[in-house]
Amino acid sequence: MFKKILIIEDDKFLRELMSKKLLSMGYDVVSAADGESGLVMIKESRPDVVLLDLILPGINGFEVLEMAKKDPETANVPIVILSNLGQGEDIERGLKLGAKDFLVKAHFTPQEIINKLKIILD
Amino acid sequence: MYEEKANFKEDTDETFRRVRGALLNVLEDTDEARKGAVNEKNKTMAIVENLTDGILLLNNKNIVEIISHPVVDFFKKDKKDILGQDIRELLKGEDFKALRELLMGKEDKDIKIVYRQEVSVAKKMDLELTTVFLSKEGEVLIIFHDITRDKLVEKMKTEFVSIAAHQLRTPLSAIKWTLRMVLDGDVGELADEQKELLEKTYISNERMIALINDLLNVSRIEEGKFLYRQEPGQLEDVVNAIIEGSQELLKMKKMKLSADIPKEKLPSLNIDKEKVGIAVQNLLENAVKYTPEGGSIYISLEKIGGEIIFKIKDTGVGIPSSDHKRIFTKFFRGENIIKMETEGSGLGLYTTKNIIEAHQGKIWFESKEGEGTAFYFSIPIDIDRLA
Image 1 (spheres, rainbow over the protein chains, first blue to last red):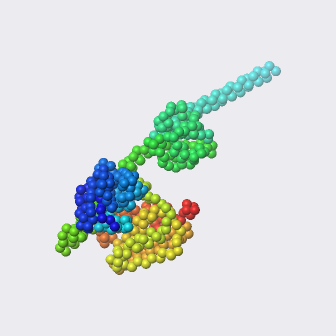
Image 2 (image 1 turned 120 degrees about the vertical axis):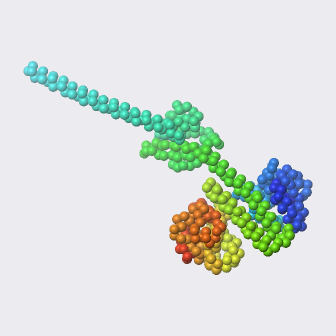
Image 3 (image 1 turned 90 degrees about the vertical axis):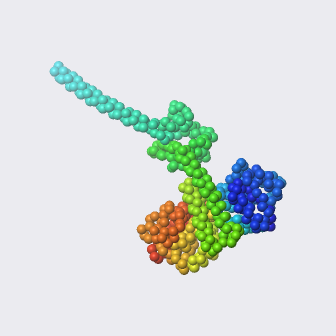
């Protein structure tokens, strides 16, 4: 079971929509709008799961993923990619770098994302 | 006696004169012919040297005898340093490694038959290579066709489509999530009329998301990069999963689906499971969409000879014979079904055909308007590859 979710998403509207929905479902939510602060938050707020976008200003999601997995302090935090990219190579790259799953934003509602997380993390 | 000697001398002189005349004529004709041949050769050489493709003519000992001008730029050498050289010497070095292998195999053997194969040179030039064997004496024509610019344009187009798709998906995700939250009552109760309207908006939005997926797929098909990865797999598993996932849809339209799928394992096929799934899904969705409520669908899968054949038959509206020729073309939708179901991208069968053919399979159909349609596809069992 998971309680604390970190959202790393640069689009303000999507980030707020997702936070609002997750809060209303009883989860603790922290968020970051770019890769660098995202990495810092993974370390400092110790979330149970991270929802990571790929297209971010500054360092991109793949780089965040790679660095988080390299750091022994954060290597075990489950990261699920939530992006509107979704071609075969992107998915394979994400999974290879250690993401637990790859979800295309446009294909899932916030509720469906939560349902997916429950399956992934159990 | 004296007279006879004189006559003899005259005859001989005459004969000599005549033979000399004839020889001179022959020499003149031969010289004419020679000049003609040299002119023709010069004309031909002028044409060859000014061709825009790189052309090399090798003799049967792999020595370069004729080249066109672009070859000079290609090797960055003077013409005199290329003519008379062995092609294997000219293609030494890391820059030409891929080209050398394509032309002569890994062990630098004889020139192979190559037809329009793409190869990269020195990391910055893309060529399309062709070899033509000219005669029994073993002369070979090698043709380098520069496609560097074509490849660049292709790359730019792919990037554009990817970025466009991504950029379009972002606001569509926002709309999808917002509508869902409002419809789920997260921001207050909705009146029935409001709910109905917003449901329709949600469905429209979903259609746009699906259309972007279709366009992305089509763009990848045209790049030739559509199949992502082929691995040994069971076609029956893919088909069964799609049937499972369609139960809700079938129930909504009160349709019956019967399937003849063998219980024993079929031979493994080398398939991109995701893409073959898309192909089967498209065919099943069409069967459901274009069959009125209460109709039935029949699916079968069997091994026939060296192939696995998939069949899907419906009791739907059928395809008018005037549309048969265009059924697999991009964006085509038959007139009879546009009236029935206004939504549809016209890309489903185009995508499906490309998926099947990318697996070396074939796709075909039988249909009569008013009676129904049966679609078939085959995928060959590539036993050698799996052994």
